[in-house]
Image (cartoon, rainbow, N blue to C red; front, top):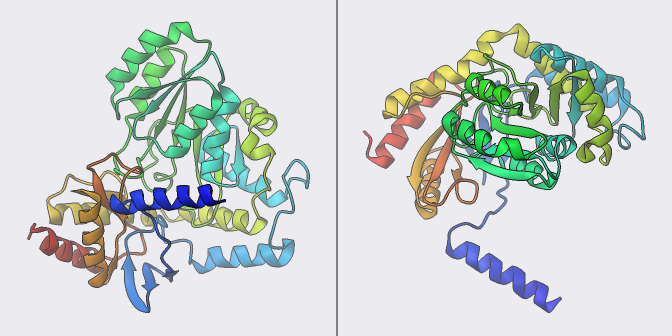
Length: 374
């Protein structure tokens, strides 16, 4: 045990020296865009609740009703404890929303990506992953045992080159990317990627965690995954695909087979949120409008999604800027390596339908003054 303690302490010291140690900070999320830390009221721009639905009374009531009717937990894996009807209804609605034959709900988006790729690819196969794809996409690719190759970010010509070079030596191939990249807020050229992949008989998996309900229009991939925890304000993950693919994953996706099913309350909340998302398109349009208002005021490249990065550089500087914004009443968390590449620490500003224009303008004004952009 002494060696374990020494190892942990040495690692912590190294993280501390590089301003890379993470700490959990007690924070209360309130309605709309409010948050509270240390007894201080803040306006949060660090939450992925893009449509402001996690506190919507209709979504809350749906969760409460499911708890009262079905209890707090699922009781076991869906293959052992049984398949709850609320989950079936949610999967049917997700598939209809994405235009696929079927869907499968996982315990989280992370679990979905850890399970999908290893169920479809293995040794002797090829997986090409955008270099900035989320850690769980990389994790699933590496767990598969397939050959994993990095593709330059959003570079379709690099993807075409790599497929031309390596595809012939492998049985199957997959291409992994995101519709909206979580730390940069930019969008992948999905249509072009699908065209190149089809020419080389490669299957495309798109992570739509940060696009659902906000910027998901356009071509759809044969494998569309995402989360229930962002625009839908609940918790969980999903894959939308053909019926045969979904049936295969029910037997082969280890992160589905060997874990407890999603609580009925989470599924019921997501189901209600999806209904609202489809019935109120103006809600989904608002985050992008506010993000573009923000980028225009700071002279940043026009926002492509509800996520806007403000690049700072070094981790210490990003932490200092985040602290200054918190002192001014705004919660905007600093993002540091290894989440982003070294030298690209940043503020990640997330916009929601729960924000208003005055809050966005106030944040932009403070940030302009702190960074000398005013």
